[in-house]
Length: 268
Ligand code: NDP
Picture 1 (cartoon, helix red, strand yellow):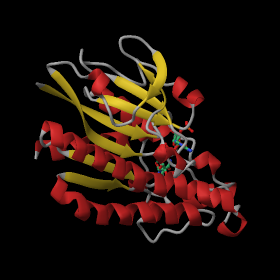
Picture 2 (picture 1 turned 45 degrees about the vertical axis):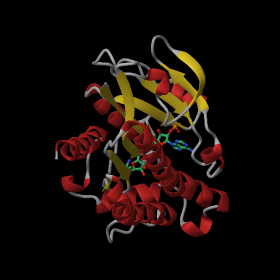
Picture 3 (picture 1 turned 90 degrees about the vertical axis):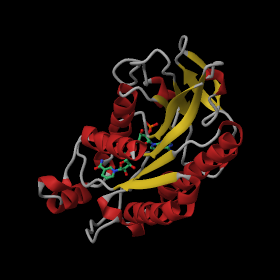
Picture 4 (picture 1 turned 180 degrees about the vertical axis):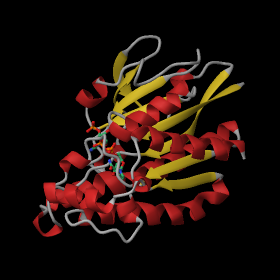
């Protein structure tokens, strides 16, 4: 039986997540792209966004509003799009690829990239409680649930199919890992600090299951919508602090880092 690796990528509709699925699909990986709504995933098309370089590559997009945590975690299927043999909308699973399997080919979860993120628009004191909840739900709590879902799916698959390695890459931020302080990002930075530290400890907890957990903590990635949502003074604060090129990267550079982590671990 031939094995085909599958990657689940959240935040795959735009910005860094889009660059990540472009990279992974361009390397022959089958992708499950997650966006917040039917409307946002409708923009994910085969071609430039999702490439197919191998005959057996399959892709799927799912609409999951991660701000609705923990409700979304109890749903077994989500509204989604299958692209093969033609574009079809239906209710689909995130971690079960049985419909793609053939007698000689099995699809297995090989990589999860938690990239979806939301930022805040004012200082902590003026951030409404619903916005605090939303940021934590999307950035941190949904990341925890995605890691758990992937781990459970791996354990289930192993019972039937033997051992597969699984990699998890969580996208944090330099604001969650360093002493850099930007006014107006208190909740956001705390949510990313939570992601970074959670990932470090999780990596120890799941290492015996053959799961690797890594974090990427970008500095400033200017070409995405994320920065635009910050207040003008926070945008200026970020620009002032991230002065050198070493703090700045493009979505494509982050996507290449994801690929290197994935590829290095699979080679080793
Ligand atoms: P964008 O704003 O360009 O994209 C955000 C992505 O997250 C979109 O795909 C969006 O989907 C998804 N998303 C937002 N809310 C939800 C939700 N409720 N449910 C499901 N998906 C959701 O951001 P970036 O590409 O810049 O950021 C990606 C990641 O990188 C984030 O985690 C961010 O914190 C991190 N990062 C970014 C930096 C930067 O400078 N840009 C620096 C450091 C870290 P939809 O289209 O459906 O809304």
